[in-house]
Image (tube, rainbow, N blue to C red; front, side):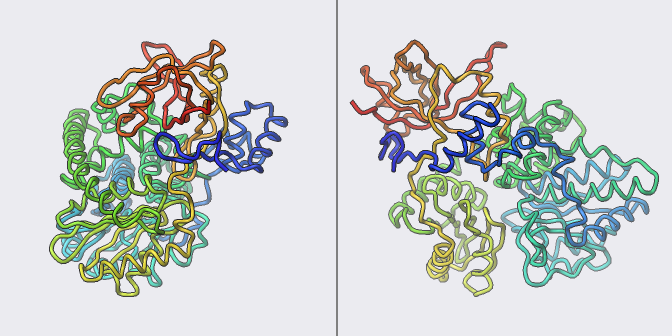
Length: 581
């Protein structure tokens, strides 16, 4: 049943409110805790039991941090890394080219520097070398180093790791493992086949951090003092959000603590990037995912692959500013490339149909650096797992994004095992693949079949989920602060979204390029400002700007707007529907 009777909003979506049992739980929480009803609605939706509410609202890393040694090979990895430190060995770090890989590499580089060692950074080129270790690179690194640490990659790299003769290899990863592991000193990965899955939600940077925690324990046991690990949590937070790791358990504490570290503006690279992005407030999880993350990724997508890792690792302010400016420019170029691919991919997917278990598109010459972002856009638009593939000749490189509850990485890996893909792998929410042109159609048909068995395609493609109602007179800065305590919000924990019913549009004006600013009132004297980004990309902009006194149900997120030292509540408007006469 639709919420407020909205079966089709101005953006074409059906509104869905909280389930009856969630509303009951919210009411029980409100009565027992005396917390604001909207906050209890969010806690109930997230499934937080009453007795866990205080700890959930104030997550402490010391309470949620698991013992690193619950992961296999942990002691082997940390012992080998410490052996290299004590022996002043030559260490190379082979990192993936995305934010998680760059953050993981920067974590190790920073930590080793504090112990007086400079490591060699190697990030493969996305187009020329592809994802993960390759034989020539590993041979080259092994010839000049004693230890190679592969981060955010390596779990499936049997042949390249075997080629690293003369050097030891340690893999710190989180991608889905195969039945056998590469022959190396250690593979620390919560997604190994022989792990229990309890820490499967960790990104690679979180795995690296856990290894460094175990190293710190061994350093203390030897009577010495190790590097300050808490100062590294900004990198873990950044990677956790940017890699779309679910924000539950220890991940919430990583992000909450990391944001506090970031607010101190101590890391030159993140300071320079925040400044070039004109970020004038302390970063939030939103900024990590949508402002900083895309800029760091831009180097690996369409520029020089190691720019992001170098930015995060540098201690030099001038180098940081130069790298940040370059990444910002590359990000603008990336947007142009992405837009061209996005338009073609959406048109193709729409022609194929958007209600299948899998939404996919493929094209000749589509840049492999943007197919993942376009897959994300398709997933958000359709609420279906999505794949976008760029072909160069007879072979295509693709990237996929999944929805909650559907393990895309496992299905991609099964396709590779069945011979329908040249190669493929990843994790639950994101995966990569290489496919021959003549296998494209059968591979996508088989993938759709595997995903359908997991329930893909059963949810409405156009459902907007709401936590309840919020009137302008209730939406205070204090309430917004309280709602933030239930965060950070992101993958696996969507942010609070409320409906403001039967609102009167008091003011409406187009601002910027296609955005809409409005003031809405409840008819009783209370009013609120709202901003809708990209409003004129949908019928919403035109209808609301020419409202002629009609009343509307409005839906979106309530947030704090800071301007000239003044804090006020504004609504980030996401949807609207005419209120019934």
